[in-house]
Figure 1 (tube, rainbow, N blue to C red):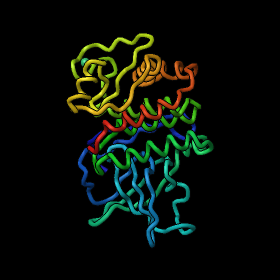
Figure 2 (cartoon, protein in one colour):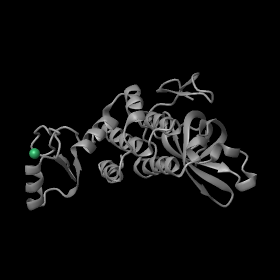
Figure 3 (cartoon, rainbow, N blue to C red):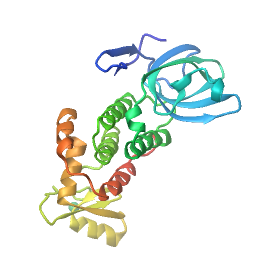
Figure 4 (cartoon, protein in one colour):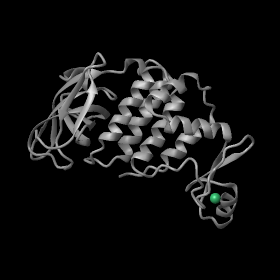
Length: 272
Ligand SMILES: [Zn+2]
């Protein structure tokens, strides 16, 4: 392991104690030899004599690693289960990356126990697996995923967490739609009762710009949001961690329009 690079701290199995590891720098090509990093299993595929794991790791981003052994002969136990967080020991040979050890730090069993929470976590892992370029370092996104899964296991509504996750991910990459200005004319969107916010392929638009875009075909109208839904989106997306947790505890359960909203937010995130 090299001395340069970033440090990622995740809580230990029992919560508060943080573990800091200095991780390799942002080069997607790992040096031959042993490496150690914190993160989770995004995806697992069974091969003939191994499990192929897509890991999302601090300092390394998304990397494919081969874990020798399959099924009952898998010597890593629960460490290769999708969505399992832990410390992974790896070995980079001239040809491929191997898993040498996996120590589980957080299994998120509470998330697996409910269909709604499991569906949200599976979506996050799937969206990252399909959109994050392998080898691209993305520690901020990894931290966002960690915090989102912690909040999910703490009982916060999955629909609120999903739109928070999708918008904040886009915001990390600088491509999230602004929530308070028209993406066409830049005019301020002022929420008031009875108003609808036009959701387009370019972002929110005021009514006038949305109509123009519809006529000219310059943007696709995706849907619309009432002022109350828009305010809930703004709160879920932009509140700081502690304020969000307090607000979410009393927020009304989101209706089905939030599912369409999160899909719209994910549409802004392209593979990077
Ligand atoms: Zn406008």
